[in-house]
Image (cartoon, rainbow, N blue to C red; front, side, top):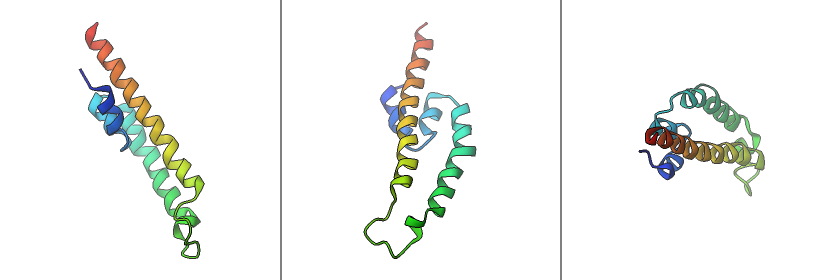
Length: 90
């Protein structure tokens, strides 16, 4: 049995919760597609590279870009662990 809450918490670092549950396909997709997009998006955002704007170190776009997928990954890993546990019981 896999702990659903632990899977969700681990997936704050995208893909780690999936590895905990043993689901490898979403981890590969995250690793190959999503993480490079986050890195590129973060480095290209002018709010992060501009020293003129001292009031804000992060724009709303970058906050949403990071925040929304992380919440989705946490919920999905929780559900993956729940599904995994259901298969074990049956």
